[in-house]
Image 1: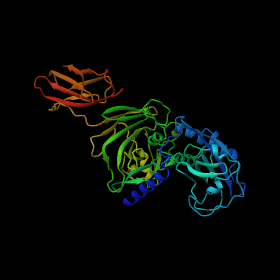
Image 2: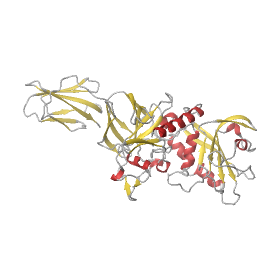
Image 3: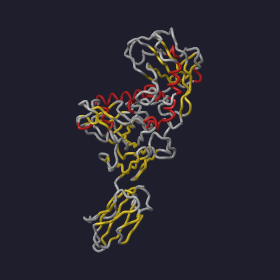
Image 4: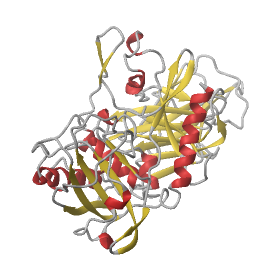
Length: 479
């Protein structure tokens, strides 16, 4: 366990320093691609130039449409698909680096204008059996010396084809989409914490809701990635410093000015698994509304006994631990499974699929270990928004002597609350907000109009006028 976590972090450290020039830079505007196919097989079985162009730029499921959706229109790709290269120096070896043309070949294609490109994309058609990855990419721009001069541009390579109309991910090719996001400076994968043998186990590629994780079930990258790339701005990110009730809108929709991510800076580091190196300094909360490229995300999971388990209600809050040990601006997301017990009571046949039910669902709460912090989902309007209560430990300034029969309801409340269990006793009612400020009072009333209150968490103090005994109950006001 310890070795595995150290290896994960060591990999991330290496990629971070190799790509530090661009890893935190926003990617905004048109990204110019030179797409250069190489035909080593020469067997007439390669995909046509028109199909490659359609997969990249034309289809409703194209890589271009995908990038425009996930960036809220802030980024796009343009470019040209060149003719197939033949009679090129042969490919040798196995592995990521030796299954694609070498840099000297990449930088010496006479019909490519290297001065205008942001990324060169290599499409390799080769039927020789090799242990080659379907795709790989640099984590940002690399220096090349070309016939046009010295330039920095990104490099991506693929040994795959495009699918019509799309593959299982809802995109013409999720491998291409995944690797192009890597080339934008995302040098890590979106992982998850899954409970295994009573301990949290880091699952590489384990976030099923993020294309930088398990891409077969996800399209959009998580909110942290969108923030790092400049697509999700401070206008859509709510940074919480105290107890509050928040409405979170789907991460997939273009909703400028609406809250699509909630960030909580933790008062101290959260160490969920002491046997590894991960330490979380923040929590991110997002809601995936299953729209756009994510609309197919009805999750059916195979269990260890071969049966299928369907996630009937996937709408809720996704909660991430964010590790920022590498750099204050460079953080890593780890999805936290809100239902760590084996799925279906049996467990999944592929361990990362245990995160399929990671959402915190309506009327469920998550108490952050060793902190006075609780997160509860109180309302869900599927595809539109969820409402979440952040409770950072409200403390009443008055002594609570507990009126045992007292009830304040409903909770959550909308426009009116009722007080019961006090018989004919004369009572005083005082309502305080999250900052301890008195916002409403009532005299001997069992029905209190709270329509003037903003959504949030409140303390209702009820005082028995004859004895002076009092009790305080916490309620949530939602709309």
